[in-house]
Length: 318
Image (cartoon, rainbow, N blue to C red; front, side):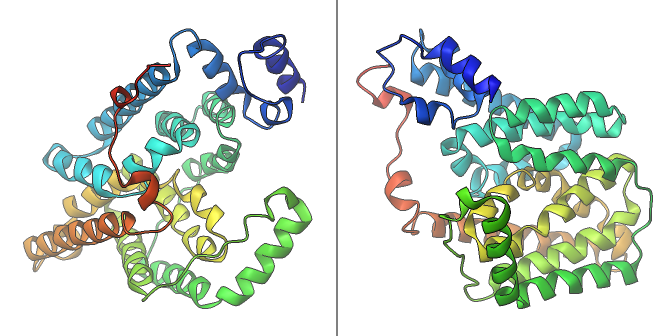
């Protein structure tokens, strides 16, 4: 509350040129308001360009640091053609910035530097409050256990049961939101299970992530397990679509997880590692393109994303 008051007085008090009501200002994260204030002399599109540059730097850093060089091309392809990454994040700028900060903070989990990780998560919450859910992820770095085949099967069956029990999940989530965060009860739109292609794909990927985990190095395993945790958000997003936004924090990690699987194919499937790699890559490329094309046919996105524009499309940079 005091942070809101401070930034409102600093940025908006006595400034008649900013068409922003006090009620709206006080419901926007203070970090984003401060960023708008910093870029006010340069214009809105200058801020977009700066954020895009920062986003490119973070993803370059992440791919360079964690993805095997042979699969740089694959990681870039997935980033471009997976709708929830480059496309949606170009619109959801506040959360995209929080996601980038989270990607930079993962190194502190490896180093078991809780203070710096805490500061990075706090910084992310200044731009998107939902980033607070990332705080418990630090505990994954302290937990040391081996994922055996029986554990992988049990966890996969549990994920499948969450997809099956949609009606029960809907009731529980609705009650939880009304009790603890009633301001979000207006976002009651539900997702669709479609034809089950997405469910089958995510369950299969979950199982592969679990059975390959035992062959990873410590850093690879941690990234993999964070991704596994993020997969459990998917069934809840079918209940309330707003929850799907939480999944955005975990999607970029798959840019590294998929190459991890490809690099260890000879360990899990020694008889046909090359065949597995070709099939795995082709399935992922086909599925990504299917989602990409479907994105532009969706009533939710096609109007806003149907026509490509750059910052130079505007008659003015302000």
